[in-house]
Image (cartoon, rainbow, N blue to C red):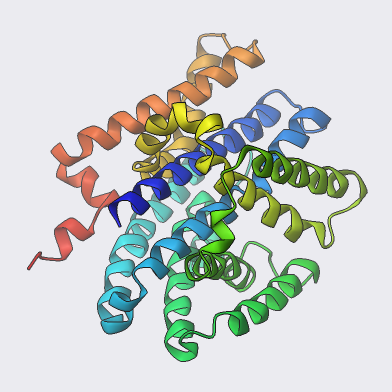
Length: 336
């Protein structure tokens, strides 16, 4: 199990780097008025095309590797995940909303009191991930107990529901009614990879990795210029397969495994802090009149996020109030 968890941390390290790059490109386009820049748009949307899907696949793999333990004590699982995910959301969600509300003159996306009222239907800003993950995990536990080993029946149903929520325009695409069924499919896909290990065994070969990478970029490029439609799901499948294969390819990525593993163990800190750090760095650059160089700014964003977030992750255990925000389980569940 330890070995498996280690490789999952490596994949999470890849995914969290994608999140940092995504937020970096988005901020650069905003700060430098490059919303119409086709290169930055292409790179940003290429990263977005599968990085969050990859997170949910990895989370699904972790769940299904330990499914028997969760099935034996479902109430404890729900309680634990509520503490892990919902409590940080209840603390940080309103805090981020309040910060944006008070600093409305400095942020592009304005917030209103209605956003706070709707925080349980439409999650606040980038905190949506941990909020949606809770519901995905609880529903996955219920489906797994109900369907037992009949994996493909719910997977096909979830695929059809995901298509419906993605392609038909109803409601707010950022609300739980859209995001939960869509990401539940990817979470459950992680279970398929656990159950059918042969699907993963062919990954990790350089030729396979290269082909998957070309298929990912090719399907994404076609959708980018022609229109997404079915390609929004296909690009995600190829993208997830590519990154899972890349991590297993020791020739291509073996040299940076330790660094990715290090980042993967700190994904919660990096994910939550990276937009705040990027915004902070940009405000400092503007004050010092040093925001004129796009490439330098990009490096400062990426380097600053990784350095500051990892430093906070390392010192948090020594500061209980900070550690509680990111790891409330340690304080609310007593070890037997």
